[in-house]
Image (cartoon, rainbow, N blue to C red; front, side, top):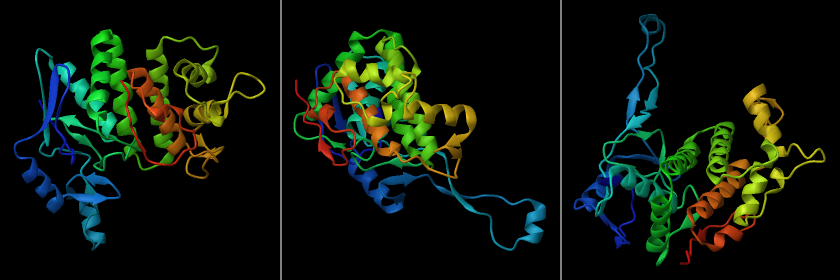
Length: 292
């Protein structure tokens, strides 16, 4: 199965499968550098001019606005091969490798959804070094092989939206995406929380992760800053206590919520990394340093 897009030319072999660069890797990479629209670690789809109505053509002299296509494909850079693994298994490994790389990877024939990160570490603040490739992918493969079909599907959904959800432009959309990821991971865990606001607490306890201050329960024991923000957004069309777009929360959810979910996903997959002990507000890039 071919997949991409990835600038890392590292090839490696794990227990039962291997990942290598495609035979035309250099050509694909060169074309990418020559033709793709990029900005701050993201690449965008082909530009297309939006059409104006007949009435607009009569009144407005400027051309229609230029938009970047939301669904597009580019040639794959890598391939994964295995003995006896079906396509669902391989797709899970490709997505899992994207989680480790901090970018969204997709099999050949699938479309990218809007802007897509191409800089390794862009979406998770982590970089693969040394044995991380093998140790990380072996952990992901063990999770898949030891899990039920339902749990395989739920983890796939959580990782997929953790990565794709970060491509949104607006902060409230990214928040909503990461909350969906949190709920998916809670369902996967099999835990039972006393209330909705306690879900991140029981997850943090299960995996030994420090709980961000915005997820701590208030004096009522039934809500936190996180749960209040979620309820306002979902049920009241508010963000930061005001109508969407008029205010932002004091909390840096785009950084800290994503980081919290990064740790939860890694821990749920059985990936043993020192990053699980990082402070919730940490802003530094880390190496995975995955231990066996």
